[in-house]
Length: 366
Image (cartoon, rainbow, N blue to C red; front, top):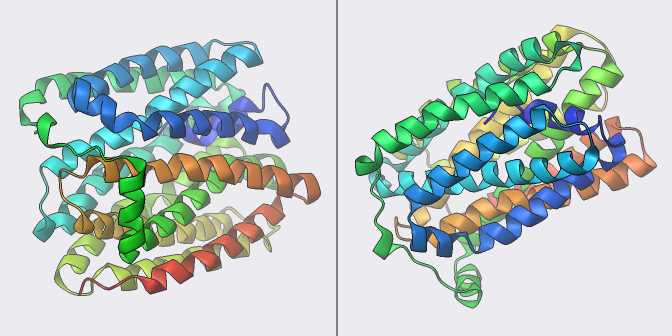
């Protein structure tokens, strides 16, 4: 599912102007947000296993369809459904994982899971760079669909070990969830940190490839290698960071360090006009060193605050991503209407700076 992520904006640009690419994503995320709000009810009724299986089958159909489309309205429909399925599936994975986790080893289990998942994100840009030469994006969606097939087989064969404890899942109403936010400052603050991180991901995933390809002048093969190196921090740092958080420091210190690295590296993009492959790779690598630490530490921190039955809180935590991806493209549209694209990264650095406040307010776990 990682494979098409970095060509989504370029793919959509075949149908609409760059300024309106964000509208496609905004619509997809608005629908995701609505569906995801009611998602715990669906999981409780049909089981996490059945919902997961259905999502993957729909994803395959949509990915194949996107590979062969020739008009904007078909692209909009299938892109929206494909996008919604990918986001919802992350909730299913969280529910499965929380069923086999305990607080004492939460850092190691969560970061091990993130490390395995991010190995796919590291490999994806290399494959993307090869397949996208000549702007042939259809091949990428075909491969993305084929990759999901073994995932279905693994899910079917592992069903008995998934711990799908249906009856114990909580599904509180909005007023009850709001009361949790009012009385628990740490839950509230970690949600804000998550929003900043997802906002960062949205801008970088949608607009960094366009900026590098169309404004700096890198070809897709170069971008593929660059992005693979850029994503290595998610494989290298998250598992050790989880062990350190469990045994020594706690999550807060490393989370703040990660945000400071993100802030400095993202802000520097505005000032770079060189076409130096090494310089751009180094800067992008540093953005993801920061993001990898923030992602790992916010997940570990959040899941230490809840238990395995809090499916509604897990769903709400993952709802932050579609909400951020709803807001960020609208933010980008406003910036791009007024200023050149490089200013987008400067404003993104300001958003990260604002995110330091809730991070500093968290109660440390050590």
